[in-house]
Length: 142
Image (cartoon, rainbow, N blue to C red; front, side, top):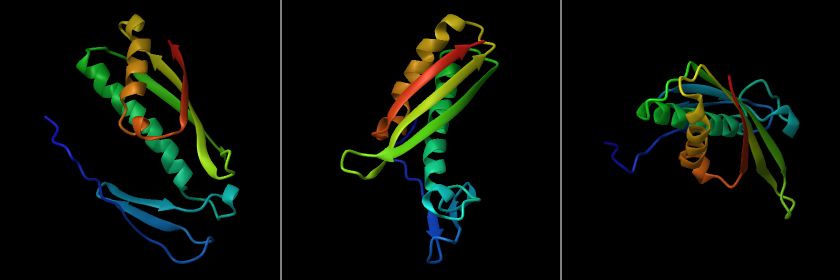
């Protein structure tokens, strides 16, 4: 049984200036981070936008994996490509406008169940349910 609330910690210390990268540390390990070149930073490390896209993608994959195992849906593999669009809102503020999942599920023993489980994972992911970003997907079952 999962006991809520659950707390996840992170720690960052960064030198002043946009040209510097920094390290973000979580209990699972460090990540090198930097402002992306698209925002006039140095690039060369994970940006907050990269981490946001990774959070959405990994939330979906983790949720799908748990649901597939609990429902005894056997798949050989799931491959997901994600595409994040950063744009301006009607108020001209930068926002994480939309995210598209290109999902490919291979070797499903019961391929007729895959689409339903994919949708259920998209609807149930903790992080996916916590964002305002418009989320779409395409699915190929091979």
